[in-house]
Image (cartoon, rainbow, N blue to C red):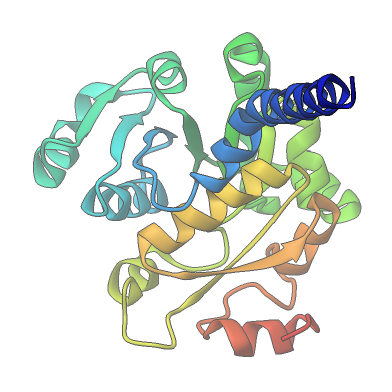
Length: 249
């Protein structure tokens, strides 16, 4: 009788362990997706293939990512695609959004409301790295709104449903091109976002482009490195940028 009880206890213990392992298996895909952000080769859709979009996209292709450039005139992007090589292609904005596991937005800031409206369905749930800067002379009232409310919060308002991260907005494209993958200390790129997994992806993509990411905080904190903020235009390494932004080392 005692023997049967002991066997029964062992059976229950094994079933309990199996249940725990099964639960872990159900939970694994979400956490593993985030952990896989580092080193994963992704499909990146780029909306706006001007100086910033073209430069950062080329750096990602160099690191082994597939990039899809888009603009209002995709036929003008063939020279860029040919220069970058087999990992690059070009087309329309809706094609880039459909292609990208992550998106990079580098357009005049005044275009955000229309983009958010025109592509609301396809943008929903997408990880979006937003590099657009609000300039009063060019962008009008929305620039005043971004200054008043903070650019991260304003971008999220006009791109609802996206998993938004502010990134790559602080430096001139010539600096990004010339300083990528420089010897340590690498140039710092501040980022901010509310979605933890989107932030992990952004961290990995900043590193793959050849820079050191500095996590500043939530989208409300993105104002600290928007145009005119203390983190804007800082051609420095990560340690020095953290000092300038009063972040922990």
